[in-house]
Image 1: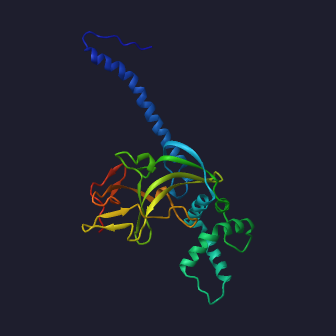
Image 2 (image 1 turned 90 degrees about the horizontal axis):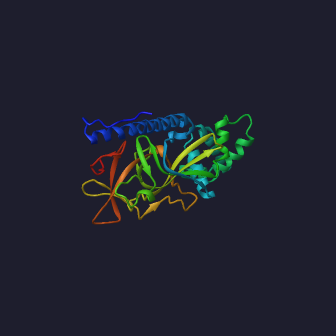
Image 3 (image 1 turned 180 degrees about the vertical axis):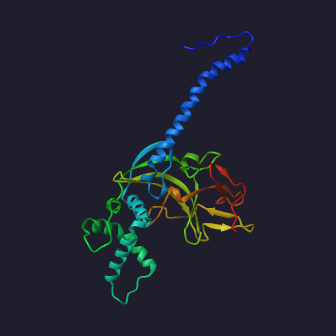
Length: 292
């Protein structure tokens, strides 16, 4: 065993520092080893997570039994974004159109409503009995058609794409915020602003996993979002949409779809909050979000 004796020529404080250093260095290596292990595990599992939603869980991990409504909302959102299901969605649409009279024309809204209401059950039944003559049914589609397991995992925080996210209850009374998110639509660059209530991980027969954020979403009409006369964006969370109370609501988004924002309360009108856009690795833009 290495023994360090005090050298009278070396000041005592420096000698104590050396003693502490020999204990401190192994701790550094243990910390580095733990980080490398997490990174290796993350890279190993990356392909298991759909929609590039995999990341690093932060804080306590718990289990949650999803109720039927939440299970349907999650499953519907996943299926809607699966490119591999496009041929089957078209097959479903054609079948629904054939059921109606020739004179009845289904508009886009009607088709989306039918997909939301009937496609999940149609897919489950159809895939189990589908034979030749229909769209190709891969092993992935068979797994997805069965639906996710009812038992999900929940996290207090999540790190993905250089961003740290926390659930609202963790940061609500703290000076730092990591629960604000913005979800930008692919078409039209429309922004939805939200606050994370839950971070959940669902799995499909333990073959595919998805990380989703369940959020409070401000009303995207004029009652929930506005620009002031300087062009700064403000949002109002006393007026929400897609709360999850109704089966047709969409409170969930993939973890990979969100970017963090910071909300600063308007002192003159406390129901409204200025939006501050964030940058990766917890570095945020000090300028308040302005419309171009």
